[in-house]
Length: 177
Ligand SMILES: [Zn+2]
Ligand SMILES: [Zn+2]
Image (tube, rainbow, N blue to C red; front, side, top):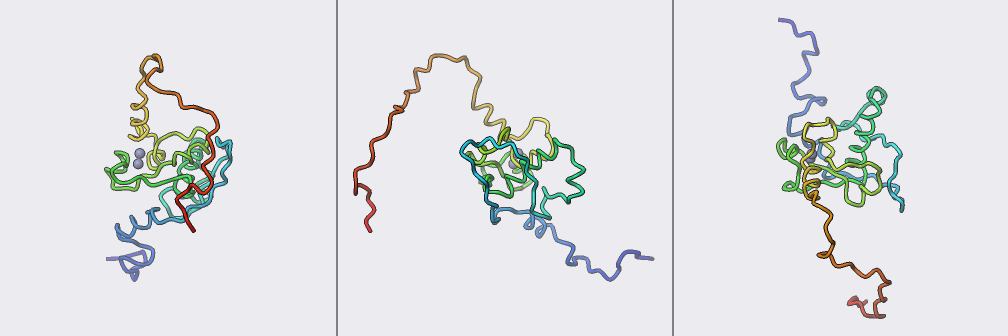
C-alpha cells in the first residue's frame, strides 16, 4: 500500500480542523466590526471588497478578480454585513429559515446600516451567496408585512406634529452629579 501524500501528517494537523473548530472559526459573533464611513445622505454606491481572510465569504485576489460584477456586488453586501458595523447578527429565533435549518449565524444589515447603502436588499448574508429560489425568508417576511392593499383613506394614522419640540427645562433631567 502506498500513501503518496505526506504520510507522516497527523489526521488533525495544524491545517485541519474538526467540524466544531471549523464552525467556531466561521463565527462572526465575537468580531471587532470595521468602522464604517457614515454619511448623512446614505445610499452609498461605492463597491466594497471583503478583507477578512479564511471566512466563508472570503476570496483570494485571484478569486475576486474572476467573479462577475454581479457576484462582486453580492459579496460586497455580504462583506459589509459580516465585517463592518453596518451588519448585525439576528437572535436565533429571528434567523431566516435557511440559517436556522443549517444552524448558521444569520447576519443582516442593521436598519441604520441599510440606509447607508444603495440597493441594499433585505436578504441575510448567507442567502446572498446564491440566489435561492424563493429567496431569504427574512425579505419575504418584510414583503408580506407590507400587504398590497388598496390605498384607502389614511384615517387610522394620526399625523404627528412636525413643529419644533420645546427644549427640556434646565436641570429637569433626573441625572445628578
Ligand atoms: Zn439567514
Ligand atoms: Zn436568509
